[in-house]
Picture (cartoon, rainbow over the protein chains, first blue to last red):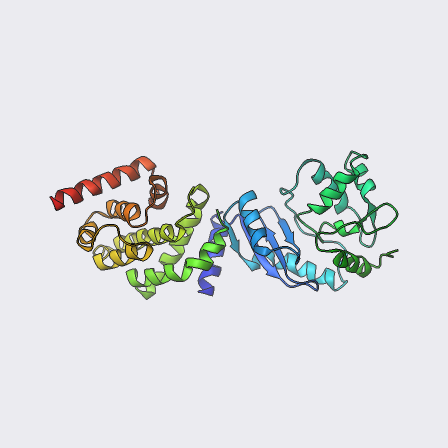
Length: 185
Length: 152
């Protein structure tokens, strides 16, 4: 049956019927769920989230044609593994931004430009996204980031250096920052 | 609609078992692919997720018929058709009538089975048969007319 299911995913992709391919992958923080469309990586779901709910959300927001097809996420998995080992500083993956829009998307694009090992404040992100007063909205944009780790919202801190929040839990945010050798006050 | 993967997780084994019974072990795998590709094609347009299992088994049924037709063999044996229809739900018609349903032309047979064994609305019968709702309604109507005549 396994071979049949793999063949089905391949044929579905070839016929344009595989709208969302996903894979469950291991990480030092627990299992991640990765999902991709034909445009690129569309979702990274952290261990703190329920994978079933994530898949239902993808089915509702993108397309119900959601299939487990791990081979389609091999490259994303490879880069994430290297990142967690400290051997990759910048992801080179096509991204599908469709799960964010408007100010949030602009904020996430700004976050995507924060270099490895550096941090920005929520206020700086708000300014980069075109509305310097929308500090709280910048925080919301981080919280709604569909592509955490790859779009490094863990590099966004409060003005003054406090950690702020993180969807994967503050210990994970702190661990990612330490791994990138960021000094945490 | 639930993510399509959950349909595979829940029903792939049953669909394969039904197809093995209907077309034999050797051809079941191709029919399995055809069944789930057809299901994927139609899935976003489905508007009722209450009997996904029945819907899938119906498509499998149709693919088995296609397979027998393509091979120029005799149509699907009545027993297999009954078995498949019976898997999804208690047949609302009695056994004798299912024998008559088995004698209908394939499209009418499928429409009747989908309507009365799987309890699908016209739109979903149309999706399963790959035709318009009007054509599905027609097949169902023709099939029922013929059954009534044979019962009279």
